[in-house]
Amino acid sequence: MANSNKPLEISGQHLSLQSLASQRYLPKLAHAKTSRIYTGRIGASSSALKELKKEKRKRPTRSTASISRLIELPRPDVLNSYLSYGEILQYLDYLRLRYCEFVKLHTLGLSYERRPIRAIEIHWNSERNLWAQAKENRISSAPSTYCGELKELELCAPERGRNTVFIEAGTHAREWITVTVALHCIHQLTEKNGRHRELLRKLRFFIVPVVNPDGYEYSKNKNPRWRKNRRPHDDDGYVGTDCNRNFDIHWDQCKSKAKRNTYPGDKPFSEPETKSLAQMLHKLAPKLLFFLSLHSYAQCIMYPWGHSKSLPQEYKLMESVAMAARNAIKSYNGRYYRVGSISNITKRIIAGSVVDYAYGVVKIPICLVMELPSTEYGFQPPPEKISPLSSESWCGIREMCKQAYSIKSQIDEREAKEVLGNQIEPSLPKIIITPKEENNTKPSSNLGQTEQVLLTESFEEEAKNNNKIQPKFNVKTQRATDCYYPSLIDDEFK
Image (cartoon, rainbow, N blue to C red; front, top):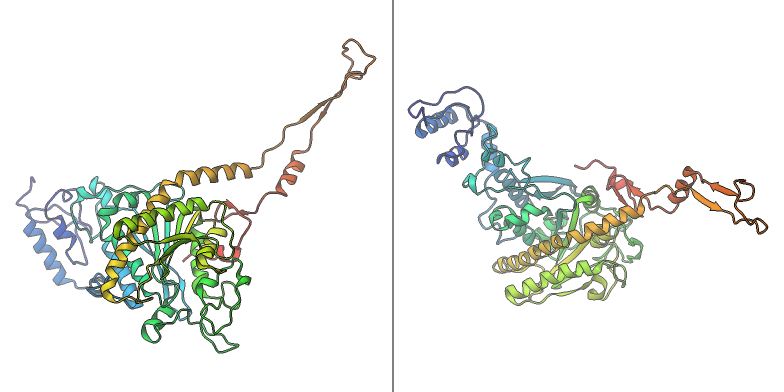
C-alpha cells in the first residue's frame, strides 16, 4: 500500500472494506469484539489492531457482552445429545449471529405455555448478502461473523417460483430423535454449507425443529412417553391434544376420547401450535415446493392420503421423491424403508394430519412423512446412536430435495396449464347464416331473401356465466382453490 507507515486515521463509524477485502488481516478484524468500528486508511496491521483493542478497553458496552454470550454454543455435544428447548433456542440464535449473511429466524407464534415456536430460514440471496457485495468492493461494512476467504463465496439468489423446502419436527413430544435430526439438517446447511452449495443456490429452507415445545419439555423432564401438547380440557380434566390430528381436513373422521393419545381436540385448530404452523404454511404457499414431516419410528416414507384409502391424482411425483430417498439410504448403510400412502402402510385411517392438510388445502405439490428407523430403543435412542441415525436421515432428506427440484419443471408446467384453464376468455360474436329459400335460384343483394343475422351476446352476461363454474380465487396465495380459510391467512404473519 502507498501509505504503509501511516497510522490509522479516524473519520467515521464504519470500517471501509475496499482496501481490506484482499488483505490477510481481514479475518482478524472481523473477529475483533468491539462495539465501535471506524473508517480510515490502514497502515501497518499491528497499528490498526492496537487502536481497535484500545477502543475496546475504553468503551465496554452491554451489547458486546450480550452478543458474546449468544454466539457461544449451548454445549459442546450439541448434535450428539438431546437438548432442552432453551438450549435449542440458544443454538438457533448462535447460528443466526454467526451466519447472519444467509440465516434468519422467524417466530411462528406462542405455545399454550407461552414458549416461542421458532423457524430458521436458510438460503443464499445475493441482494441481502453483504459479503457477496464486499467481494465486489461495493460496500463499506460487513458482518462480524466472517470465517474464511472471500474468494470462496459464490452466492446466487434462488430461482423464482416454487423453490422452498419446509421441514417440521417435534410434533409428537416423545419423538426426541426427530428434533435432533432436524438440528442435524440445520447444521449441515449452515456450518457445513460448503458441501451443499449447489443445493443452497437452488432451494430455500424453512425448518421448524420443535412444533410442540410444551410437550417436548414435559416429556424430557417428567414423562418420557408423553405424546400430546399441554393444553388442558376444562370439561373432563384431561390434558393435551394430538397436534397431528388437529388440522382442518376431514377432522370429523377423528373419533377419540380426551384420555387417548390420539385425541384430535374439541375442534379443528383448537391448539395454538397447529394454528401457528398453518398460518406460516399459507403465508409461504406460493413458494413451497416440498413439505416434509419428521416422525419416528416406523422406518418408512409416506405420502397422502391418511384420511382415505384412495391415492392423490399426482401421487407418482411424490412416490418418485420417496423412492430417491429410499435408494440413497439403502446405498448408504443398507437399511430399507417402505414407501406408500399413509393409510395403506399404517393400515388405518389417520384424519386431520398436517401432511394431508399441506397437500389438500395449502396445495403444496410434494408432501411426505418420513418415519425414522425402528430400533430396540424406541422413540429415544441412546446418545451414541444419535449421530448414525442423523447422518442416515440427512442422506435421504438431501436426495429428496434434489429429486423434488429435478421435477420442478413438471410442476410448473402443470400449474401454468391450470392457470390458463381458469382464465375467463370473452367469447367472439356468433354469426348464423340462414339458408336461402328454395324458390330463389340466383343470388340477390336483397337481405330479405338471404338473411344474415348477427347475434352478439353480452360480454358481461358471458363473463357472469363463466364465473359460476370458476373455483374460488385465493388472493393471498394467488392460486385457485376450493378451500379458503381467511381466518388463518388474514392474520399478520409474525
